[in-house]
Image 1: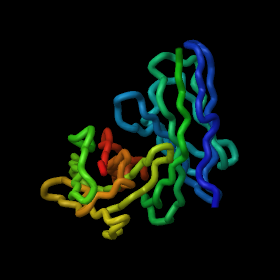
Image 2 (image 1 turned 90 degrees about the vertical axis):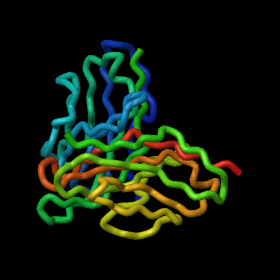
Image 3 (image 1 turned 60 degrees about the vertical axis):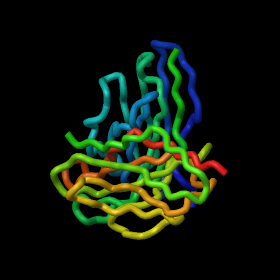
Image 4 (image 1 turned 180 degrees about the vertical axis):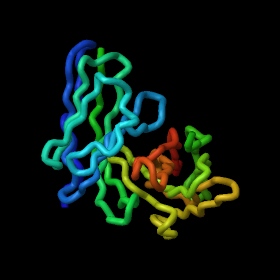
Length: 118
Length: 111
């Protein structure tokens, strides 16, 4: 079974430019999460999709970040315009829905995308 | 606010020595606790979850609600245990599943 994949693995852009990160979850996983680790800080939650719907986007830092999951399969996270403080590693994770109210299964993580904004 | 604290940034032990990676959390409700591990050049992967109450790769962790702790222990460390270890908390209800991570502890097991 293929795991969660993310593209690109690295991205180096200049301040003000736009970058789009992609995540392909494990097939059949309705839940998709985006997390970010900024240098020296903990991994922080950004948002959560259930199929194509945004379940929780409370962790999104500001309106320069836009996440989509059209069709409920892969997801994209666009940063426009990028700022220096956006540098970090962006992780995607997916999990099954256990169908027990708010319980979800183990989250499986992708390898991450390292974003460097110069 | 909910928080996970891992007080040690780096823990260095010799092969065969016992190891304990500390994790404390702050949450007044019923938490679900996890340990994730990231080996060099590999992705973050689940090591343990408290509801499973199992031992993985010789590691165990017990949820202590009185002390709000979920320390990870192994009686005899191996060199291949060297990695970054993250303690994480998941809340029931509300956000439906997002994890709250500690800053991680880098475990170095020396030969």
